[in-house]
Length: 120
Image (cartoon, rainbow, N blue to C red; front, side, top):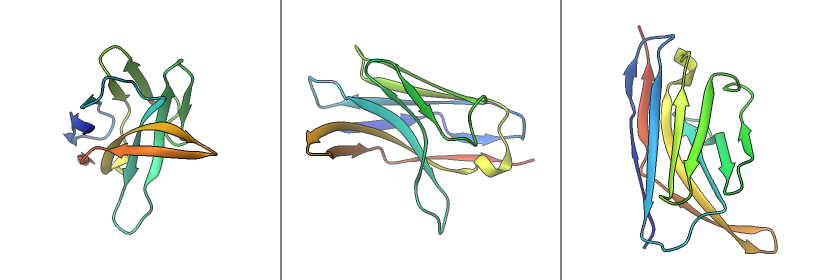
């Protein structure tokens, strides 16, 4: 059974930095895409950043230039370096890993979420 375990959330002042990490276990295979989503109360979960096994990355416009995603395929880990954090970055951050099933559908796996709070 695949499990994703996140770490690294917490409370930080505006302008500060945090590093989120996610480790996947329960599979001998990798994931085509790994990434981070975030969600605030009353809003839909949104993509923050993702990275494919081959390296290409995607970032939400709101975090481009401030956040950096990286992954270690051999270890099935993904990290999110977050700099210049702002109060609007406050959310629960979820690790995601996915593999294609064909015909445009995907098998998604999710972590339990880690709280990031940016406040003075």
